[in-house]
Figure 1 (cartoon, each protein chain N blue to C red):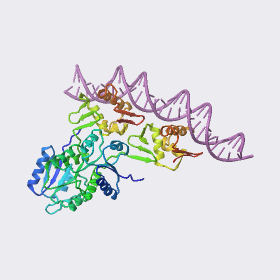
Figure 2 (cartoon, each protein chain N blue to C red):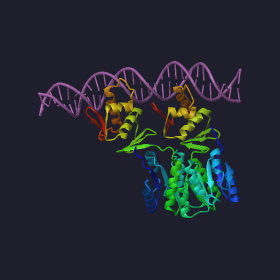
Figure 3 (cartoon, each protein chain N blue to C red):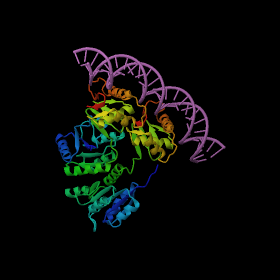
Length: 227
Length: 227
DNA sequence: ATGAATTAATAACAGATTGATAACATACTT
DNA sequence: AAGTATGTTATCAATCTGTTATTAATTCAT
């Protein structure tokens, strides 16, 4: 599983605030890059593809929300949080209308900022929780451990990927093509029909040896569904 | 193709606030459904797959953020906005930690609420369970589930495709050639006249065992019509 | 209106397709 | 090279689905 570092752009002309924000974000593991103005930011977005942007509105030479509006117009879809002293109702509305995803007013609480960043990243599909839970299954993404009812269960890499795929899409029928692409990769050639059956069965045996949980419901002629 | 309305669930025990929120959301074109407590909400989510949820925290019998936490545990990934009077720093943090996407404190500004809803919907615009309704039939395309009057009905893949075809074309006479092409595929060769009859009958038995609904009207010598 | 002809509904059966499982073979890791 | 992980094949079991046969309903000509 690929764990790409998450990089966050912060645009803020007051250096002490910039440092404060960077400090708190770095503390929880994000990479940050600060700008004192919007200058050079667009080029940076183009080259680096950062995951999120935090931007002040009162910036020298280019008002923050206008800058975001222009980014959106140019097709940039990066998640944006405004962090600004402009706190009138109209200001906040303007922030959203011009393409912001969240709006935090100064003075701000660092922990709330971090949580809002995390929530927005999660909703944007850029991070996943290190742990995912479904029914009584707990998946620990970082160490590939699976815990079910306080029992540690060892899964192979393939089995883990398969289970992870289902837990990301619970209650949805995943057809065999999708599973093949997602778990085995799109370039898997000469893919045997039964490979999925067998792998899924090995997974079933491990996470539910008694066969009483009915995690995976076969959908005849289509695929499986995690119930 | 008909654009699916966006449906928003609001859980709020103070009726005047509930009405106020519904009013403002409806004004900008969203469908809303209000609940005075969390009772029945989970079942509703299962059946209707609404696009977003707004929830108070001080609710009778079930604290809002705990409810959301439990939803997340059960695999529901619906975007959630807390709308609550609980405004201490720890409350807000808790809201995000338990799975909220946004947190608005009362008293709130209706226009900001609407904008935050819109922003969150835009950012979430990933996969929503597609569902189609006709009369009292609810088809969930993503899990092939059929719900009729609160009853889950199991259909085979073929039966589902057949029903889906009719629900896509309600009140229109579908002739046998069309049904064959659509459900069985254009390359189906040596197609027996009676196959459609039998399959349709099996479907009828399952979705209307008492035979009182008259979903499918036979059109003599032509095909069938979903009434 | 009546009965023959045509089509639809229904039940029962059979074959075909698919899934589950075990056993084996190969590939991969260390 | 040993041990694990994964893919392949074969067999069995489950469940769909198509066919056929029979009965019921509808149309149409008389």
